[in-house]
Image (cartoon, rainbow, N blue to C red; front, side, top):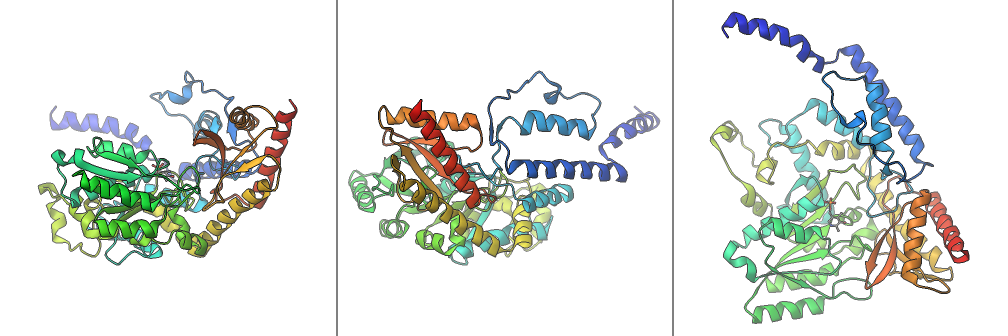
Length: 487
Ligand SMILES: *Cc1c(COP(=O)(O)O)cnc(C)c1O
């Protein structure tokens, strides 16, 4: 094509391409429709069903087909509501007590909107000194709450699994381990350590390392004496004790490994000490949580999921490495097409691309930044203490009732329990209890199997869960137990 033909074709395309840019009135109308929809969503989750396993996806519908011409937002919102929001679990509900409840703070959603629309590039301070500083400062803020040294650096990740992976890669690089060393390396954890750690070892190339499962005590905490014994034995065998993962709150029961004792062992035996605080580490923000997590500040690295304990929406994790230089040395790379960046002094505002595997990334810091700004840190401290107390309240209330076999006293905001029926198999009874509660859909509880016991888990972590919701849940559980006992 010559220039005239090119211009003709370009002029033909421009009006069609401009459909990507709605005008002022369209934007206003769309924002208002979104706001109407979200208001209706927020008001419906308070007393609505938490589970809908009945509505089956009809994947032949238009909802998952993409036509050449667009549709109206109202129609798209209809599809979104019917096919995406309604089926499955309402994880943002105050009556969602399954797994580890997710968040969905309004302030976080607003932060996401601002981040997406301005699309500031948070990967380095050349592109956006403020966006980069925003993410660095959020990590520093949390590191400071934990009690980490000033040398700490970290990264906002998509979640805990990736944060754990990044910690493992960092520890591998710091130890200077090469492929030929991997099968001599030993990793220490407990039987209830999150499965993403094994996944991460595999991704890091270390699937062949030895995993030592250290026994737990009656409260499901790692036994430090057993840990030390194993390490000594492994050294004798010529193995390389390399990495300890302690739980800063297990997913199953919220149990916290004895972090202080483990840190002493890690120091004296010269082993990397990592704390998986994906679920629990946010509790350092309240006094009781900070006391229970004492020793976390002695770790070499730790993770926390703001999409759990800081009530944000999915896609917000955080890794912190006590000696930040270790993180930087693990990931720092350069390239000719990045040479413009070198002219800027970034030492006080390190690029996240030198602290993580990512280059282009979602500006995920904005959801946390706006949430801390608008609500203030005190609101988070109060909410977290409230959730701890709600789990204790639940535990105490059920413990007073005949037939309930309670798990260990909640160390964080998860209470494990089961009902032992007057006759018949307890595992079967509790399975049925879970299934029927889920079918009813007023509350959602998930289960686990510990030492061959089928247990139910009552996990409190939704920002919107208050005492009325816990009372309501207890009422539903008791009614259902009664119903099954009588059937
Ligand atoms: C949730 C969780 C993870 C995994 O985090 P994701 O954000 O889901 O990837 C890891 N460890 C623990 C203890 C968790 O509770």
